[in-house]
Image (cartoon, rainbow over all chains, first blue to last red):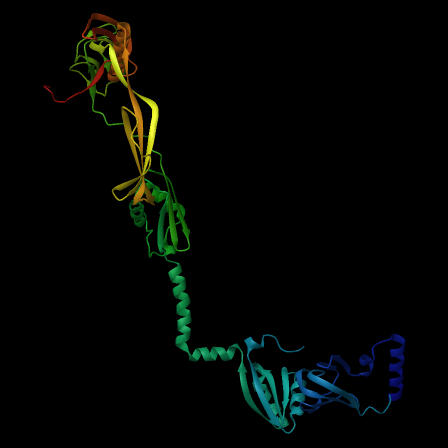
Length: 97
Length: 398
């Protein structure tokens, strides 16, 4: 069933040209230089320190490295991070859809 | 982003959260929809963040669930300021008092100015204004309206044609336009017009009063020409100021003597200027040395001291003009001498009896030449004003 549903969504995506984050519940990451990071569709904070921040996503984790990191504001599905970001890394998403 | 608005007014708290898993606490906050911002991780399981004062008590169950401890680091916003101010009551009272005082003092009359008056004294205007309630240290809001004030003031102040009252801040300006009064007529008592001399009336015009003589009638000195008593004698009478013009023929006799040889002083136009420098009451001559070359001369002295403003300094110039004079003799014929004498007499008549006098005729009664002089006796017949005022005195023999 899951396979069918995923295929259907992929087909819809191809036919209607709808952004993937809407269909697949993927995070949308917006970055302003390396100062601001704006993440939609997150699933909570896993780790939290000035140098490293780990956010859980619907699938896998998002690791943010940098210095002087802070959460400017946080909502159930959105988070805005400030600081100087040096590294953004996806983990736990090796399984291809 | 989603930082609550007006945090300063609503009040917010800077808290430090300590615990094994601060992340859980943050997640719990986000899930419960508690606005939280400026979350700053510190070393050693510590995070600082800001929450609204309103939500502070809602943190408690979340803290318990996630096993964190909270410590208030700072209080920001109006509610805390108010509490602080409430503790400093007298400071608050001072602020309020300041504004109250400012309001009260600015709603008081401090100055009353009077402009535009020339004849009416400022003190009188101020006195009248005081009676209307316009004086310093009076509440502005208790004054009448400017329209009413100006109306009342113009009733109180005669001799004004318009009064404007204007308030600007704490100053009240009373603007006055004085009435242009007609020149006052000299007060006159009831009077008759009587004759000044013996004369024959040539014209009589009574503006006020009762004419008693007619044209061509002979009048004696002191005779009433225009009476100031109207009405019948013994009946209803009214006393008025007699006014009018009476002209009559008057005879003047002049005895004239005119010398036939007349001496005049005449300036020849030759002159010499001497200049002096004056210090104190000493003068040092600078120009014009040498003897005066004239037989007869007149000297005109002009002193011109230096002045500063209205102060006369003791230093200055003096000039002397020495002008040559020559005496000239003129010999008149008898005819010329007569003419000169008559002209002089006519001028004298015009000066004495008014310039509108008219010489009707002149007769030379007697004429002789003796000792280089012409002697004459002339009779002039002159038409001139003969009226003179005589006050009517009441209770005189009545």
